[in-house]
Length: 218
Image (cartoon, one colour):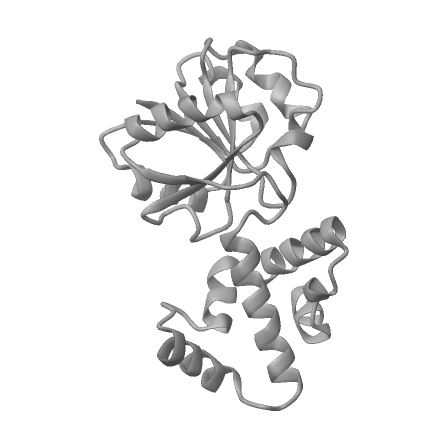
């Protein structure tokens, strides 16, 4: 398939690692740079979508499959003003390290888009799980909450970063400790997820650790 990645070099690398080098790959570091590539693309992974940039897809071919990074927003919000019906839009988690996994976590705006998601995931040779269209999706929300709790634990002087990482890996069989995970994801990204989820839910469970906030803003 002809796949266009709109994002940074890390996003492009993770997409190719996930779906394989046998596809034809196109890369654009910005939406402006993607204009000349849209006519050939069959699938797009857009890591930095917004309502205005969706208009750029006007030059794309019919029945285009578009995956939008909806970690910090929702698919419904991005598509609120979208009128074109021959495209298929899906949400996905575009945080670093979250795409290149066995299971693709995706969301849909309308129930009748599920067959299209099944079709494109079959062509991309990936298993998938369709989750609710909500800020933070599922896995990012859980992992960022764990990282936040680890920062609260560190603030209280209960254990060191290395001890917390070791305890979580040995005690829960996680591949990384919460602080190791934060470095891979990017602490500023963790902060943004928690902030947007708290804003969306008003749930005190997502209040951000002062220490995490301080380090994320450095």
